Length: 176
Image (cartoon, rainbow, N blue to C red; front, side, top):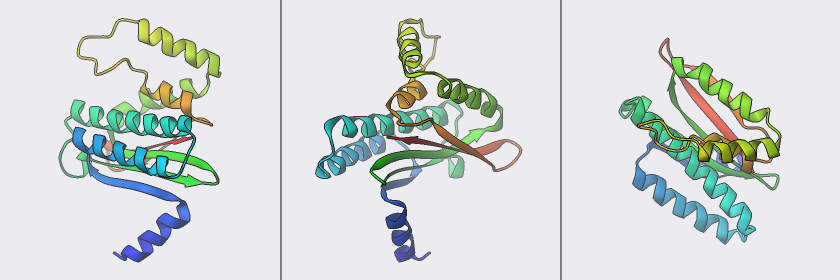
């Protein structure tokens, strides 16, 4: 691998930070601190720093929770890629991880439903979800994707890439 070439590609794409590997709570926390420090050094508006940081945290936690739930903690299935880029005065937070093919349809349906909501309807749904009772064993309020959509300047972007008959690589991108 040519590290200089990779660095040049990162520069062309505006990639400020990138992580590739297994996610742990401590890595999520340390990278979160780095995100805040980097963005504050860029003298970004406080709200933009909060939106980028909150989106990063939601993404990283969603990936980590999914990996724990599905027991995808080893080898390639237990790794994730998360990057933050700044291009044309917009920030993009992108994550990629392995998901089970059986989870694709429900996930795509959920994202498409969220993407179809107007901002007021999205806020109302978030409030409704926060007030609803959580099923036993739930890891959160189930609003992570909605919160990211609320902070996004456009629709949530996603793609899938087949790996084999059991799993695919899922990519999610949020523009801020």
